[in-house]
Amino acid sequence: MYQTLLTTLENNILTITINRPDKLNALNRDVMHDLDAVLDEVESNNGIKAVILTGAGQKGFVAGADITEFLGLSKEEGQALAKKGQDIFFRIENNRKPIVAAVNGFALGGGCELAMACHFRIASENAKFGQPEVNLGLIPGYGGTQRLVHLIGRGRALELLLSGNMIDAQTALQYGLVNHVVPQEELLNKTRSILEVIVSKAPLALSKCITAANAAFTLQGYQTEVEAFGECFATEDMKEGTAAFLEKRKPAFKGK
Ligand code: COA
Image (cartoon, rainbow, N blue to C red; front, side, top):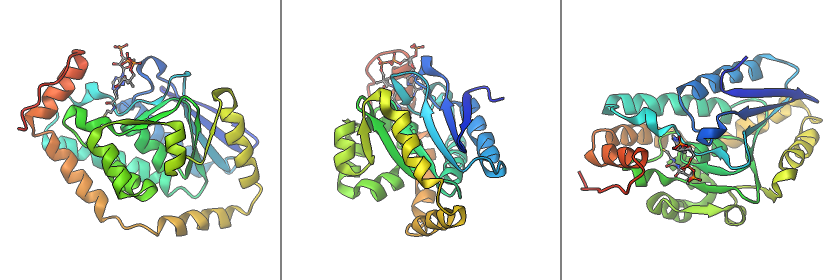
């Protein structure tokens, strides 16, 4: 039914698995299109009361937006890409049904942003989190600069954003980025057992909890991010950073 997603519905819990394991489940156009479509299904199917979002394979949740699709984008196209990504992630964040990320490996760039758009996160012991966009001459564009600050505080967020460093699952737990860390083989069962409690509660009350909790934040920051993300596409360093990644060499940044 979906080109890049696997879905299974069991006990009213839909498990969505992003299925590009050879590319560490990087978010290309097809994945973003399928995520948008599966959210239609989540919203319209009364048999779905909650959702688990995870990645295929044992290594990656999602290793970011697909860098191959960044080549040659203009400032305006970069802004449009960020806006589209933010819109899909808002559909997750504002969904009236609980959506939980089961982070089974690398959650980098757009992958960390996707996990943060979910209502909360459970991680396997091998999970790694980071916003490595500065290595490419870029910044996060799918809400990462905003949600990371909200979730772990400005100081920790800026250290991650500015350094591009990854943190392991235990550090993510200590930062409050994830709620639980479990062995990989227990990840889906642990996530399911939490959701089984949740789906036994009143659906409208669940939906209103989500709406009210989300109202704690304003939207201005997201527009700021869209503009700044697009501006990166007008820099030489972004072209150099993405080319260097794809050519498997170190980038030579010029500050231009
Ligand atoms: N976009 C496109 N392709 C990606 C990708 C991304 N974000 N992340 C990984 N891949 C691809 C790799 O190019 C590689 O493809 P290939 O086998 O055709 O060469 C494949 O996925 C496996 O990744 P690889 O780099 O060989 O695995 P690794 O274990 O050596 O390293 C990472 C894993 C996650 C550290 C590394 O893949 C990485 O740094 N990815 C980019 C992360 C990033 O910058 N994300 C933010 C994007 S905005």
